[in-house]
Structures are given as C-alpha cells and as structure tokens.
Length: 567
Image (cartoon, rainbow, N blue to C red; front, side, top):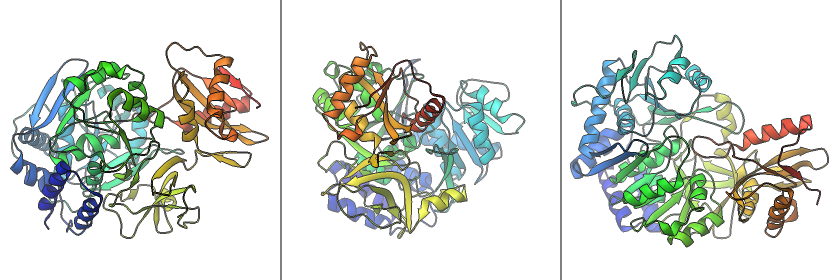
C-alpha cells in the first residue's frame, strides 16, 4: 500500500477508534512502505491534507498576554511555509544547512518548522530560555547557517553569535541586522527531494550528567515515527488539540506539530510568557473549545490545586500527560474534578512515543502503559539479558533488529553512542519494572536510583507518596551522601499556599509516607523550598539538586528549613 493511502487509513482508524489488533496490523504495514525518498511536507501535508482538507483550520493561535489571535487553514499554513522557505533560500540556505529556531509560540514558528522540513535543512529547535553560554555551547557543536528568533530573544542570540556571520530572521517586529519573515509575497516553493535517512532535525537534550547531547533525527524518524505518538495520544481529525509545551522541546514537535498535523486535526496554539497561570490557562482551554489536551506533570499538579468544578470544559474528551511520570493522586484529583482520566505515556527526545496508555486500554494509575508496536521495548539487566519476571527493575531498552522507524540515528558524540547502543539494544537511560499484565512502571533515571543501606530506592515512588499529604504541592527526592548508609533519602518539598515550613509539618509528612511505603524509602531529610529547578519542559532537574546536596554535605551546611530524622 502506498504511503498516502496508509495515512488516510490511519486518519480513519483514529476517528473510529483503534483496537489492539488493528494498531498492530497498521504499524506492520507501515514498516513495509518504501521510504527511500521521503519529504514529510510534500508526501503527507501536500499530497494528503491539501487535497482532502485544504480549507479546514489547521491552526488557531492566541497570545495570552497581548490578546493577538490568528487562524490559518491548511492551505494558508502551507503558503506561509512556502514564503518562509523562499526567504531562507534567498539568504543562501540549502539542503543540509543548520537552521536554529528559537522563538515563542507563534504561527511563523509552525511555518518555519514546515519550511525547514520541506527544504531539507537541519532544523535545531531551541528553548526560549537558553542563556548566552548555553547557545555558545550549541553553536560550537553545530554552527548555524541561519537563525529564526523573535524580538525578545534577539539580543541573547546576538551576544552568543559574537563575530560569527549568520543569517538572522525575526518572526515579529524589526531590528537592525535582522531580516523579517513577515515581509514578502507568498509564492510557491518546490520541496527538496530528501532521502529517508537524510538528517533533518537535531535536538540538544540535557542528560543527568555531562553537557547536553545532540540528538540526530532523520527525514523519517520524527516526521513519520510520530504516528506512534498520535496513536497513543488518540488525537483525531475532528479534534481541536492543545499541547501545553514550550517551543524548543521535543514534546512540542511530538504533540504541537507532527501528531495533530499527521491526522489533519486543528491545532490550538497558546503563547504565554513567564510562569504558568493555571487558572487563566484552563479558562482558555474552556473558551477555545479544546477537545484533546496534552500537558506535562508539572502543569497537572498545578491544575488539581484549583476548584476544577468552576470550569466548564464540556467539550474536552481526551487528556494525556508526558514528560515524566504522573503521580496517581494527581490523576485521581483530576478525575474527581472533571470526570476525565489522564492517560500517561513515555518517550524521549531520541524517540517518538514508545510506551503508553492507549485510548482502548484500561488505565492503571501510576503506570506509563504498554509498549507501542512500532518499538520492540523490553527490560534488560546490566549485562543486556532480558528481564521477564514481573516487578523486577531493569533498564528500559529497545531492540535494534529490526531498527524502529522512530528511533534517532544517534548522538553527535561517538562515546555517547557507545554507551547507549549495546548488546543489540538502545539503552534509554531509564529504569522501570512491569507487572503481570505487561504494564510498565517508571522507577527512575539510571543514575537517579538511591542506594541506602543496600536498598535501592527509586525517587518517583517516594515523590508520589509525599504528594499524598495535603500540604505538599511538589516534591523532588534525591540521594544525600552519608558515611554510614552510603546515601540517605532526601526530599525537597514545595508547600501549597497557606502552609508554613516547620519541623512539626515535616514530621507529619514523614508519617504520611511511612503509612504508604517501606521504612527504608521514607525520607531521612526533608527540606522545604520555594521552588524546584526545572527544564523548559517542566521536568525536575534532580541532577542539580544532587549537586547542591553533595556540596552542602561536604561543607557541613544546613538549609534554613531543613530537618533531619534518625528514625
């Protein structure tokens, strides 16, 4: 079957609802398609959507700060992308040239993304909060030929570039030394005849150790591999799909770009700057008639602190979470407030969605679901031997034969490739266990596991228990060095409004954890903090907290609201 027919079949099956058998059959057929030559914009957007739904709304964008709003049909978005592509080509951009994209959520962000794929450039989506030094590091690893940014980030980009000669484009406003993507007439643009294994997307992803890794994706891996993400999210052609994600993160590509555009749905794009105003954001979900909603755990934890019954989100039918595991108590609170079940799923910058709670599955709170048929996911021990017994912790690994369609090509650093690709597997760097029914449960990053008195403790389980206490808004658990037990379990806790740090409250929180977990998992140290360090995607940076803890223990320092317990 040709690719276009398969895409149309996928759209139809999504609308009706996949079954487990049908989803396996579809992805078995997908991997048989000849993708030697493949350009996602030409072969999917233009040959399917511009023929079937050119006049349908592809993007409904709103800026929460300014009130600006714009809607674009599939035809209009395609023309906007052509305009951007012609601008870039006129500036000298050719197939294989690196294009950095560092801008807020804006229609021209989608158009630039699409233009880069159509032109066969190497797109490098970059977080909007990167510092000058962070950009310099990225530029030293992969020198840009051009950069697309916005007026708020232009100065940071200029400082990072220094004397480097690079073509610079703004999506908004005017600035000396910058070209404007808003200028010019919309014309046609021919698609580059890219090969399936051509490199078209690079991401820099923060590891738990070392400098950010450059992740290399092909013309097929993200663009077509994202069908796995779309099928787990369950986004349909009839949906108005919103993903709460900052640009520059792989999840934006997963859920704000590829997944909804693969099935021909309407994307709802919301731009906000600074801290998330959870009440205002849910009001926008309500006002814009969102039917399918994806958000990270950090946002869900904020949402459930509100009185959810104040909102009329009667059109909302599907909600999913990704980024890091979602605590069961948050899922419970959301369900009680809205009647909807949050479905968790798992993937990485290096892949598309690999494990998830599909729409046709019964959800087990705390589980990230079952492996997707596009990926042969399993658990292995340190020596690469497969683990088949339930409840035994192992490395989440992906079999490389046959190589999954959505798996990245590799890292730019060969040493990191040697660490990740071993024994015929890709090692994700994460650990999990599975139950008797084949559901996977996240334990930790490989080096986040705490070893205390010969016990191994995964931070996520302890964090979930901490959140059961009504005073706890957020929690991060890390290892604290100890001369006797090697490591102690330490919890950094952010309190909900109305609660004040005290030793008595720390004791009460510990008692709650004691009632839920084995004694060795109960934190011996609790420190109340105002906030936790996070990535742009909302993931808690435990590595930063571990470094802080190691330094403080070495110096014998104690936090202002830090409490130690011996029992």
